[in-house]
Amino acid sequence: MKRSRGVQMIRASRGNSQSAAITRLALGYSRMWGARIAFDDEFGMFVCSGMRGGYARGGTTVGGAFLTGREPARPLVRHEAVHADQWATYGWTFALRYLCEEARHPGARNRFEIAAGLADGGYRES
Image (cartoon, rainbow, N blue to C red; front, side, top):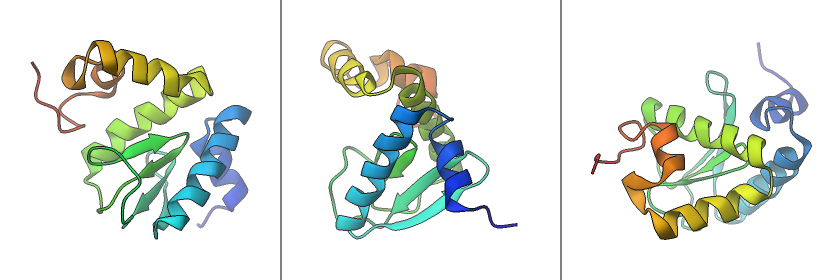
């Protein structure tokens, strides 16, 4: 059964109004970069694939939307769903928290990446 976009937004934002606003912005941004947007029922988030650019590394989760240039593997979507949970937990401040952590402990040492599962995210444990 296909869910309505409103129900999908609630699931993707984990019921958090700040995360929902961030997710809406991310969906609009991904459209500008040519994304194909689909909702992943298993992990409860939007997957914006086929983007021409506008994301970091192999992809970036913003709110409840994963922005990437390719069709992601299932373990990667599971990893990114944890980042969607982190956005819902910290709201707007997650971006700043993540960037500060990345500056101090880049890549596989970043606590947010560790919590999301390094192997699922394609990181080598250091």
